[in-house]
Length: 335
Image (cartoon, rainbow, N blue to C red; front, side):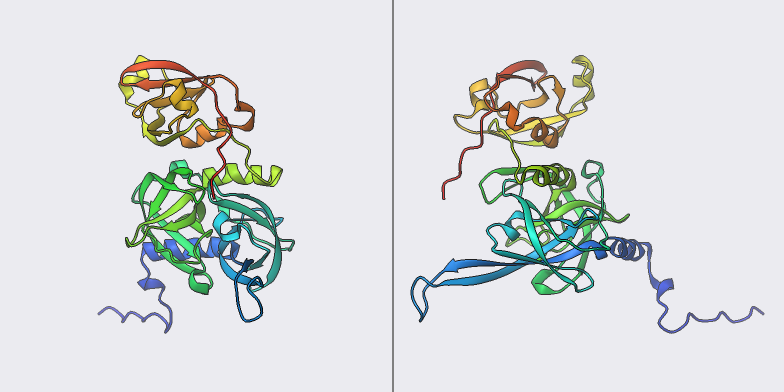
């Protein structure tokens, strides 16, 4: 007769936790200490009993995460843009006044900084390596509830959304990990505890359609915000998304890249239109550099390209064409 099996001690739920739960718990333990609450105050004009032009403060906020040991924090541009005062509340409850380092509304990203010790930066992953169906965890502060965790999967890649400036943000990550007001700027994390996106938007009235800026884009933007306070760039006037190239095409044209940028929109009067670029073309090279995706195109469209004629190679059907394009400065947005 076998001896009786001793039951698990009261309160020990470890045997009940499946691999999914364990993965979420491990990721939250790893990244949770890096997640912060971002509180902002902005002044606005409005009438009241004391006079029609009295300025009244408006309060708002969102989330963010520490990404360097010396206090640099990533968040969304729309969370801190135009703020008069920014305060950061750490995971342990400490409160610090933050300095706005740089703000890029065109990618809805911003960097702020606090001066504090013993900070734990989040590990940044590679958003090009993620796959549809992959488990992801969102951590943030919706409606002021600190360190709220939701989990889901990557629902889609290469999505597009418009920033508040009207610019199309391409290659956005779609997830069904629930986001709510206050989650903006928080990290989207893989099961191994690496940040692969910055949560930024919920599509209403749909349920379970949430979007995040890929971390590869965020890395590129953050470096420039820290260096210059803004992102210096040029534009050619296209909307696009990443697309895989057929192996036959890569062999025929002896291409080193396996993907490119599918042109889904061309702005009227833009450098792209003047160069003869059409919807359906696939951009594969710019100034001799392989273009594997939107991030590559953003990287080459620097301030130094403004007004400089540059060769751009595209695929039009099975045909390879070289166009000459002259990037311009972004057009100012009308209020």
